[in-house]
Length: 426
Picture 1 (tube, rainbow, N blue to C red):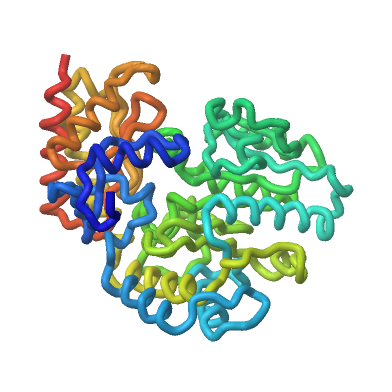
Picture 2 (cartoon, rainbow, N blue to C red):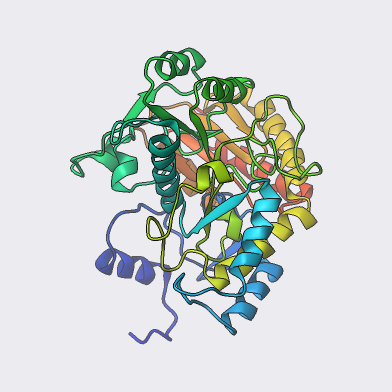
């Protein structure tokens, strides 16, 4: 078959099944166009996107400013590697560090790469600044975490599907329960070899678990008191998704973008990805101040594509859109409406038991076991009704639309979700 011939959904899916590794289990819908909050399949059917590529497309599909910046730069210079300077990287580095309030940035491409970078940075700081004996540094992580699927990261994952038969695993990590300050205090004070605490401000992949309001502030205080680095993984929660520029804020110069709450803190290392490019290009970043970042010297870490001119141009445009279109405020406003409307329905529902989240990162818990296919079947019905979402952990459906959605569209989506859930009431 010629690649120019139009293929049916079944033909496209068959091609992936035959020639692609089976490392994903997609919903059976084949998309070929996106604009704003909508996507279209190969047959022309239109859907609301309620996953946003796992919060990568916060600015909406194919945002003209972001795509324009990418096209302009791609026609000028795409890649030099870091063997040479280019005229975009320094401009981007100044832009992004001032945007988030840090001294320096280390640019990478993917979220998992950024997490790996942060772990290396934390360990090197621990040996050279804190004085931990070499190879003895330990980093605290949380049960239920999702930071990626590299060999190091799965070493401290609870997801046996991601871990099994991929060992031997990387040592140097201590797992504690999420949202448990007593557990963190016990471990952080038990050894002088604790280098850092890596945490998601909200555990998205685990089912959108939002911790206690004072959890992050107390955790940061414990880290400061014990000379331990507080590492915030905001790959999914950052860039306005939760109703603030960051789910854990503090020193970013974005008063008009954040809810000013005393519980917000400043991470020692900030990890960003996904929506830092608006879903248009692989871009990630690790930000820290000089006292931490300056332990990295030439040849000790890098990436051929990290900091390339296209990535720099795209990221600046994507972050411009967040500010110019007030996406933090919009996510905050619409998220409250979404949870309130779903909560009213759930009061009398026997298929849905709970809605939780922050901003436009939300989840509905389905009244069935993790091993059941009820949530999957509900997502299939949502697809048929014009809305795309996907289960996580079997019985939880995550809802995360692009942040450019307006209130009329959101209420239309709420209606679709409720009417779909009614089909499954027992």
